[in-house]
Amino acid sequence: MIEKIISSGQTGAATVALDVAVKLGLDYGGWCREGEPIQDKYRLKRLPVTAHNAVTEKTIAAAQGSLVFTEGGNGSLRLERIKKTVLRLNKPLLVLNLARESGFSASRQIAVWIAEHQIAVLHVDGEDDGRKSFSAAGRVANILEATFFLTMMDTDITSPLPAAVKQEPMSEPAAVAETVAAALDHLEGVLSLKDRATIANMAADELVSLQVTLGEYINTHFDLFRANSGLLNDCRHRFGQWDMAPENAAAVVIRALWERLRATCRIRIVK
Image (cartoon, rainbow, N blue to C red; front, side, top):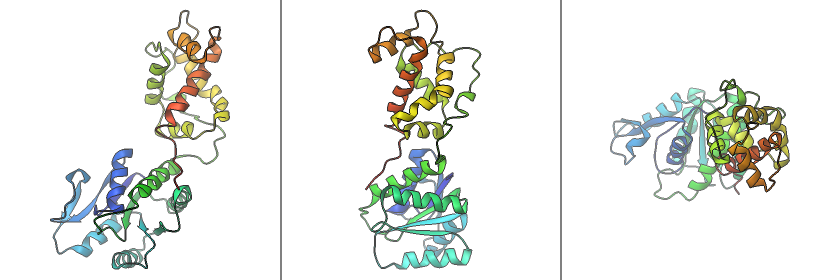
């Protein structure tokens, strides 16, 4: 699983990768040369202006693998320098040509490569990073985000969220959640990022498999069987069924959680 992203911070894929790390809450950093217009928020260590090769050397050496994005060119001096450095340092390298690979297939290819080489610290670069414009920035960001979630998730969801309900003691109900929205806020705080991504990427007809784990947690933790439960009443209102039994209300909360998480944690398949 990716834990840290490092790069030279130059315009293009290197900057996009750092922005993705910031967005996803990953550790990040790297090296750049003095005088380069790179934002301080990236926390890059600056080397003397003459140390051009040293930047490449340090970023590759500090990572467990290097991912380089290209846009279908015939290769560049930058890419050749990266290839020679990873070969000399005996580091894994994946060059992804965006003219040939894109979307979910690209993310899956990267995720498989990361798993094979057990890469936690990833160096990201691009052969055309020196250009002022980078037309593939959005695609690279989507690919990297989807890759991150793929490396976190189990590919076979047969027993979803086995540990999701173990993060808090269940001897007492949570602070009273009188609405579905309040219950969802609580659940998002309890569930791990992996659990949230798992739920978001489930099909609607798979949600029933959450009843044994997450459903039981909801029933007990929010005390849905309490007389005059505001949460139960809100579930009835949302579903339009005013005689809904308490044991069926958890399914309404799970469905609402799934709909919310699909907007924030779903793996996006880009073309």
